[in-house]
Image (tube, protein in one colour):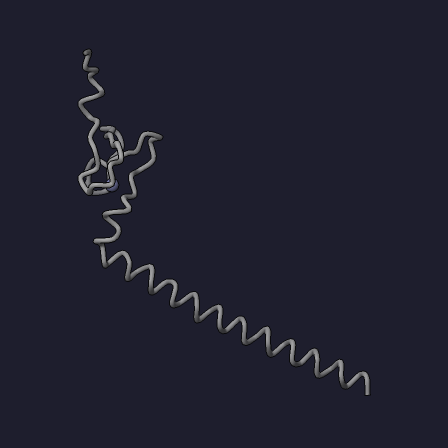
Length: 94
Ligand SMILES: [Zn+2]
């Protein structure tokens, strides 16, 4: 069995999602750490790790909460406009 030099960089994800990861010395995070990459070369966004990252989830939840409020406001606006339009219609008909 021939071990290629690049095989030294291949490892399985430590978080147990069984994804094959590799590193490229040219691809690093802002802090200079090597970023684990998947087979297609995209950064590994571990599904196992995300579950244990409450800070990240809180951020997403807050964003969704904010979106919900915006959506609610838009829905109320639309309802208000529709009521106005229907009101005008009925006025026109009479
Ligand atoms: Zn993983």
